[in-house]
Image (cartoon, rainbow over all chains, first blue to last red; front, side, top):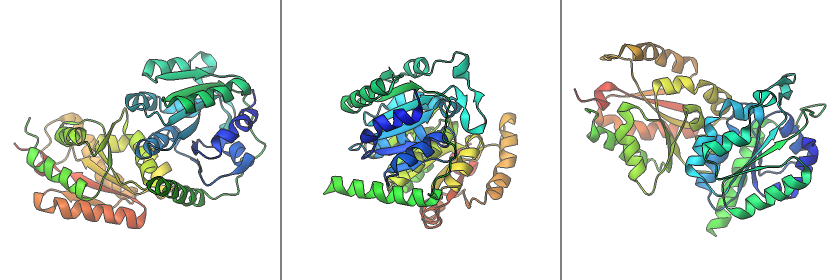
Length: 193
Length: 170
């Protein structure tokens, strides 16, 4: 499965949710599908997109938060799975695109290329629902199921190690940061009304 | 355990006065009472971490959602979180209120704490992180409030070093 096809298939589910992605190919691909003020692309700090998503999910329990992670980033912060599992926010969905590669820096294989099973790590960490979806159709079904379940879910999706020609996004990172904050605050106010 | 309950309570009350709603923490001896107080407070969300850098992400998320947070960590935890502080908090202009127990400084008996103690302040200076020392109970409320105010005005991390004099009753 190509990650762009996967993202395109689930885009309607992402469109109105709080979305936090990791850096690199996935950020550029989601941006190209159509940027929204409720999308935040963490352009550095590898591993921390899930921690940011957890922070948002804990303080905004009325809203669904979707983190789009990758194998290289998750392997840098495996402890995040145990911390998410400890608090189990039902409004948090953690999607991991596993291309078995550090694609953005030249395609070096990650440990998932040599047998590390992130779904198994997530299960053993105590994440209550761990799904594996390796086709666009099954990913869409898994995302729909997870969002309806109100259960902390990690979805592992194997994708090909192919990224966009350019990672350029016409969105300075601070503009993204301030826009996203304003958007979250507006969403908070809507709940209070 | 001669960790000061009275001064821990002072610090905790000062955090409440700062409208802190979410605290991330990794246990360390001097922080036990503060973590317990956060855990027992139904109005506080306490996030027990596996590693301190996660706390930078959690505070960033809380800030973007408009909620005040604080981080409780030992200075070695601060050292472990440096890349997250640089690559998330400094890069994205995220205010952080970091309460750091200052181990390995004057009076330290544990040899293993001393290297971290000696590099803590030079590294805070290298990162250009404004730093308050909390030594005196009378300063706690004012200094924590002022630290938070500067963090929010500058959109920058600030550090409050919790000293042995404040935290430990020999």
